[in-house]
Amino acid sequence: MKTLTTLILLLISAGVTAAPFLVCDPIPTSMSVSKFIVTIDGIDHDSTPEDLGDGMIRLHYDLSWLPDGDYTMSARSAHMWGESEPSTPITITVSTPPAPTNLKVE
Image (tube, rainbow, N blue to C red):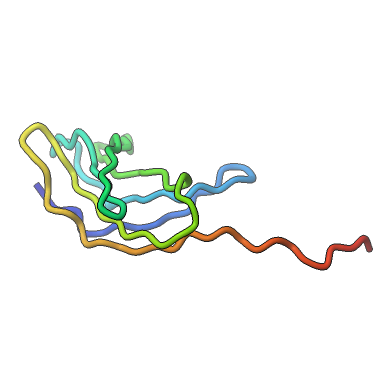
């Protein structure tokens, strides 16, 4: 099975909220990937593949639950015969925006 080599942190906007997702390049459904295993700071999290509807799937893992901090993450794909090697890790920083200052009515 092809090793995941590219992970992209993608912000997708939904109305007034935005959720960051960890995604990968599409993988053909013929590879029979049943899950992705996302490793964040050494802890594994299972993720169901997102079906892109064109014979392809991809990792689409919601990161919105992460509190402020620095995180190192990678992913593996898996099916009934085993798991891929881990992808090249990426590091992200999660931080909330600062509060507005000097409020006034004009």
